[in-house]
Length: 270
Image 1: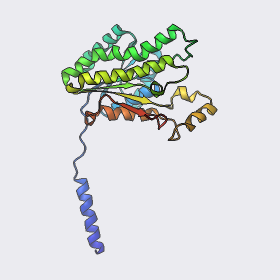
Image 2 (image 1 turned 60 degrees about the horizontal axis):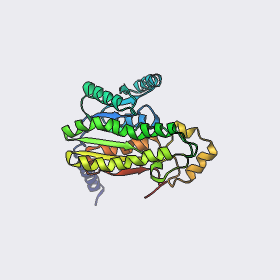
Image 3 (image 1 turned 45 degrees about the vertical axis):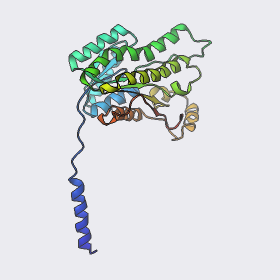
Image 4 (image 1 turned 90 degrees about the vertical axis):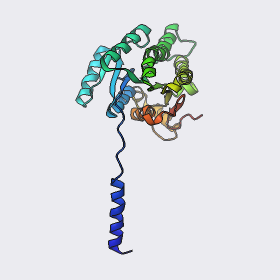
């Protein structure tokens, strides 16, 4: 083949490639991310906003929320903030109604809010147990219960529950946290069965060790020991989790439900 013929062939291929229609943009939807002002929550909010969705999030500390909102505005994001204690059912109902009244029906819900109160069981107080179960597990019911009706009415919904690697394998000093995060898996599977025929999917994401402020505060020697146990050789990033969320909320992920997406760098496999 002559040089001229090769060039003509290349031009033909390029022409064919550029004639492919662009991928369709996702339909903008109202998203609620609980606990969105934290490290992982922030990454999730940003990723879903970049996809064109309208993003609302919850907070408890007003001062922290104002600083966070100011920083997000500087970066070009305009999120909708709602003060709420997601461990409280009535407050969660009020918050969901406010989101719907101001933004429209919620079609994507990311249950991300949570706390830790670590202690061995022999030393754990009932208050430590109750706080974690209420904030990490009860909150999933508290927010999902009032939001699910809007999804069923519209015939579309995505519910993502942010669990943890420790809900799968356990962790010393975290019987409360591990129980709450494991409970998310059972909730996910049961609800997925109930709403599958209505166009609503329910899935769990279980992050491993993620590079957040909490992990960054750990002594370097301990951090090195943790990384040595992770096959990919690094901590995860909040963006890794946000990517998993974006995948599961996509219209094209409608055949995935009742699943758990482990996002842990191979640290725990089952």
